[in-house]
Every structure is written in structure tokens, then in C-alpha cells.
Image (cartoon, rainbow, N blue to C red; front, side, top):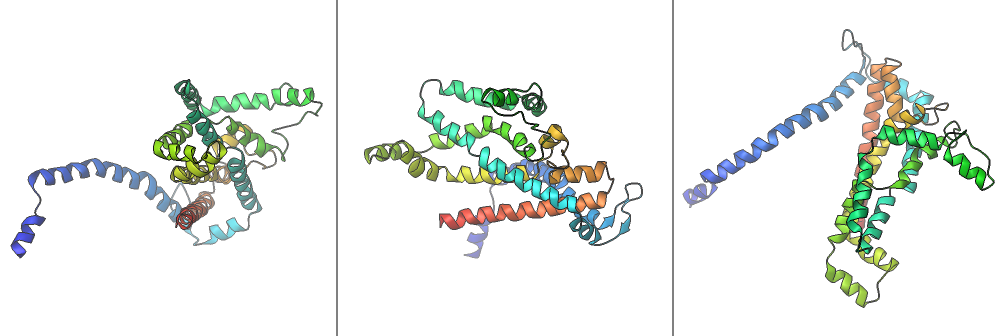
Length: 300
């Protein structure tokens, strides 16, 4: 009996070659991920424990003093406040736009491919070009935004120079939507069985009711994934506010990403920047776990 079990456990030459081939494809990706992802994270934590000296690394060991100094810095907490403000505005104004676009695209038959292509073309526009266009729109002297305000009898605004409006102006361009997210949502919606749609139509579940009771529950998995990715991306936001205002005015748009960037390239304080990076990673990890746990609990 044991001999027969051992024979069953023995892999055939073909199965062995298939396993080896699979590992040959996986190993380079695993090595690259560990090298470019996990090693920098561990390196950042290591640097945060030192008064890091780039000339003669690692410098003096200070333990958790970088974290203690960081938590006593008012600019650090202001950066956190700005980061969560960006997150709130993104979820409120931008996150749901591609989903709505995909729902409407699913309802049309003629021109669907054309509109889908139009939405995807927006991803080809470099972020720098998009920022330049919108900085022109927000310009207080000759920008379109103030021209529209004046047309309706409003007062001209110092959009990007007003600390109360800066974050709104940076996030607002996202309402254009488009991009790959529209295609992902549309693919998920079209993956719903036609039998479900037909049964819903027979029961009178059409229009808004179809969206709420049929479409959204059946594409919930992709919505949750996009929500998690949106939160992660927004919490790490750096390039967009930096290109718009460089973190100004008066630090009103300084996200934690810009705070870390300035700590490295302006203050040359590598230990503090590494500590801020580690705290950002921890907070993002906690938020991601909570989102995934919440989705599982609701599904149950």
C-alpha cells in the first residue's frame, strides 16, 4: 500500500517539467518584487533608527528618537490633515465618476466603442500637461474659472493662492473621469448574466432600481478593489499637488508625500523622512486591512 502511495506521489516527467517551467517564470518576478519593494521598506525602517549620514552611513543610532521628534513636529500633523482632506475630497468628488460613466455606457448600444475609446484616450495625456491646462483654468487674471464666475455675477477668486480653495482646485480636475477604471467597471457590468437582467425586467426592476439591486451588488468586488486602490494612491499623493502649488500656499496642499520629499531633498534629514515613510506605510496598511475586513463582514 505504501509503495502505491509513493508511486502516486511521484511526478511524471511532464508534470515535473511543467512545475519547473512555472517556477522559472515566477522566480524573476519574486526576486524583483523582494528587491524593489520589500527591501526598500525594510531599509527605510532601518534608516529611521539612525541619525542617518549619507556620507558615512548609517550614522549614529538613535532608536525611536526620529519618531518622537516627528510626532512633535506641527508640520507633520498638518501634512497628515492635508492628506486626509485630499482623500475625503477624492472619494466625494472623483471616485464614483468612472462608475457612473460605465453604467451609462452599458445602457447605450450605438457608439459604445467610440465613447469607450474617448474615455481611454485621456490616459495618454501626461499628468504635467493636464496640470498646465488646469493651472491656466484656475488663473485669477485670465482663467476660465473666474470668467465663468464673473458671467454669473460672482467675484473673482485666487483659486490656487487661497488656502481654503487649493485642495479643492487640485482634486476637482478628476471629475472628468475616464481612464482604465471606466473599462474595468464596464467589463464587470457586462459580465453580469443576461438572465439576471431579464428576470429583473420581468419583475419591473428597471432604471435606478436595476442599478441599485442588480448592477452594484454584482460588481461589488471590483468596486471594493478600486476603493482600496484609490485610498492607497491618494494617501501617497505627491506629484499632482507638487506640480500645482509645490505644497503651498502656506503649506495648505502639503501632503505627507511632499513632507517626506522636502525632508529628504530640502532638509537632508534622511532619518526623519524614513520615519515618516514608515508611519505612512503603517497607516495605509491599517486602512487597507480595515476596508477588506469590512467588506468581508458585510458579505457575510
